[in-house]
Every structure is written in structure tokens, then in C-alpha cells.
Length: 87
Image (cartoon, rainbow, N blue to C red):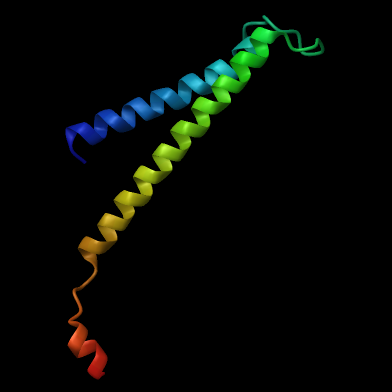
């Protein structure tokens, strides 16, 4: 993992945490009562937070899948196709 990868993963993790906070903040800081109808600001905060969480989760999953695929390719033995066909 090089420096750019570390910075990218850190940014994605911060985006994920920010999205979680944004989605939960109206209730955690008691701006929205649990039993009251959601205000426009609460709806906006919640769905924007969920969108950020989805974006960051998708990007992190893609990064991990790509890294695992690269690792698998680098550790798998090279098989000569002509030898494999004759077996």
C-alpha cells in the first residue's frame, strides 16, 4: 500500500464516519424528538448521511476487492497454457 492508497482509504473512512454522524446527529444531539414527525432538515441530514455511507462503503469494498484480486494474481503460480492443455 503506497502513500496515495493510504490517503485514499483514510479519506473514505472519514467519509463513512461523517455519513454515519450526519445520519444519526439529529437524534444524538436531540434536535429531533424520537416520536415527532421528521422535519425537512432531519430528512435531509438522514438521507445525505445514508448516501455518503453507501458511497464510502461501495468505494472501500471495491478497493479491497481490487487489492485481493491483485494479491491473488501475484501469488498464483504461472501455468503454461500449452502444458495445461496436454495434461
